Image 1: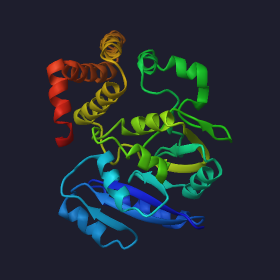
Image 2 (image 1 turned 60 degrees about the vertical axis):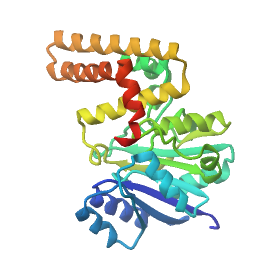
Image 3 (image 1 turned 90 degrees about the vertical axis):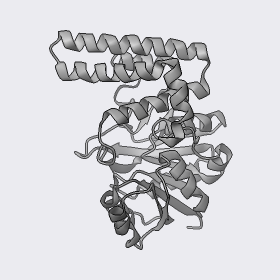
Length: 312
């Protein structure tokens, strides 16, 4: 065990979740040397006191909430490891996932990023990766009820039910392990992303460098998704803002226009269909998403918000 894995956890007012996550690391990780860095995005003083008293990790306190990607970038600058493991605070290691992922990278030099299988709070399989890069096809697939991905990938569209690793388009940021040299070449997360889609972006750029992005099913992690960031209109807006940034960075204006038009039409159709079926809650969900999407799609609104994105 010569190399060191730097485990980075970004916290924002979720100190108890961080403590539980760290406890699972200390309990489960036996096969590698590691350090834990918790970077705090300007949590309340009460939350910070819980972190300051915990000697199991190094605490990096930030003066403001700079978002997920830039907080990881800040922690990576002080990390000593040759391998970085970015872990959500609302995760619990089920097994020695860190060692399984580390060993895979050691044995597969052409793999730049890998991640494990995620299980929800009920310990049922949950989305751990995506097989499709964000694109017109992936958004059309989403608009048609994910029909294409289910037909092509079956049960392995977002969770690895096999006993072997396979390549994917992106690993979710909840448990993303990356080589330090690849991280340095990519210059970490793109700072234009505040939260959401920065994982899709870094995986996209990693594959452009010629490295694989791989799902490793032996690594098992529980993801208490939603506990660290509750569903809200603000969350929907942040997701869509991340989506706009990704498409703006990687595609042409004409391609973006096609994607935006298709999305607006599909959200409107979904809202109407669920309304006709009497499923009011589902209809309202899509109507709200359509409302926010239209606001962001407005050219003036998008330009204005993108320019202020880092100050959200």
